[in-house]
Amino acid sequence: MNKFIPFALPDIGDEEIEAVVACLRSGWITTGPETARFEKLFAEYLGGGVQAISVNSATAGMHLALEALGIGPGDEVIVPTLTFTATAEVVRYLGADAVLVDVEPDTLTISLEAFKAAVTPRTRAVMPVHYGGLPCKMDAIIDFARSRGIAIVEDAAHAFPAWYGGRLVGTLGSDATVFSFYANKTMTTGEGGMIVTSNPKIAERAKIMRIHGISRDVFDRFVSERPSWFYEVVAPGFKYNLTDMASALGIVQLGKAERFLARREAMAERYTRELRGLPLTLPADAPSGSRHAWHLYVVRLRPEAGIARDALIQQLSDHRIGTSVHYIPLHRHPYWKTRYGLVPEQFPVADAAYRAMVSLPMYTKMSDEDQGRVIDTLRGLLC
Ligand SMILES: *Cc1c(COP(=O)(O)O)cnc(C)c1O
Image (tube, rainbow, N blue to C red; front, side, top):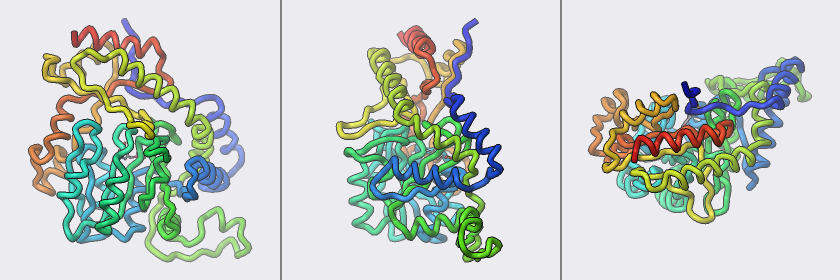
């Protein structure tokens, strides 16, 4: 019997384990010196003078970014329907409404036309999602949003590191960009996220709101000149800080970002080369000047494949190959569907993509042999 090939696995080496153990032995395990160092290194990696504000998830980061922008009841935030629910749920945390829009057929990123058509006098922000790690067409999105006074918060959960027009995602000139370090992302801290912004007001507000609305963070309290017991609460904040154990792990993972990306690029190239000719729509590569983070490799079954998506997933599973679907679009989930009275016909591109898509396993720890087995199995099932 073949061994099971999981859909995703984190890539944790001895260096990560040693760094976390050293943190545990240091006596400082919550937010402290490792977290300050992680933020500094992350901001330096991106360059462009951005600030990096760590949080315990990308969901928390997107919540804080929208909060810092002053989004609240009566406001509308435009979100592509083909995303994880976190992108839209943070809008509801603040009492605002998520306006779901369709995606582009080739890239599966937010459709500029759909974005434009969804704008109302209440539109306050748009949240482009760099789907799978492919950057959205940010120049056009930013130009249009700025012309209408609409803020931009990028969901870059899949896009570390990715480049658009020669610049790293995180430095493209939006109001904030949020990365995820969830276990299956391109780098991980177990759970974690990073808000990146070049707007000092957003940075300052997010730093306060991530830790109970306290105006000096915990670490500063113990190193500054003021008495260590003193702090001031300036707002009813949240508990979204990242631990030093997570940051110690993140620092080591960050140091491997280039190696991880090179491996994913090689794997994506191999899939694209060896799956060509099958009745599949293969994922779009980044245009010249841009670079795909290749968090996901999403194929779509073409009608002539003669097999339904669910059946293909079952057959791959029978061959002990794990897959996933990114995503069941938000308009199909009971909460979003009923709250906004949505039907699939409003999102023809995302809905058709959903019905045809399978995410293939692709992660740095996956062996060439295992990838070969996925390719051979697909060839067997689709020819
Ligand atoms: C993973 C993910 C998130 C949420 O990230 P967390 O760090 O788990 O909160 C948000 N959006 C997208 C597109 C994701 O894939």
